[in-house]
Length: 68
Image (cartoon, rainbow, N blue to C red):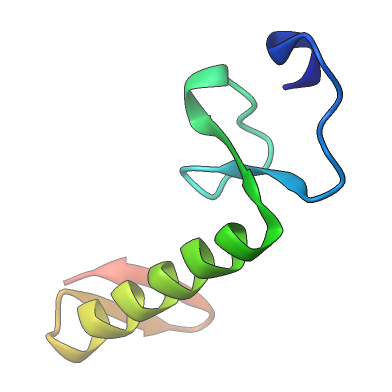
C-alpha cells in the first residue's frame, strides 16, 4: 500500500482488507483508515454477521460459517 500511495503510512493509519482475506493484497481490496475507524469497521462486520445468524441467513457448525 505504501508503494501504491507513494508514501509511508502514518502512525495512526492501518490497511484494512475489505474482503477480510489478509492474503488478498490487490489494491482494490485495500482501504487505508485510522486505527479507530478500523475498529469501527470490524465492529460493524461483527454486528452484520450476528444479524445474519439471528435471521437464519448464516449458520455456524464445526468451526465453519455457511449460508443457509
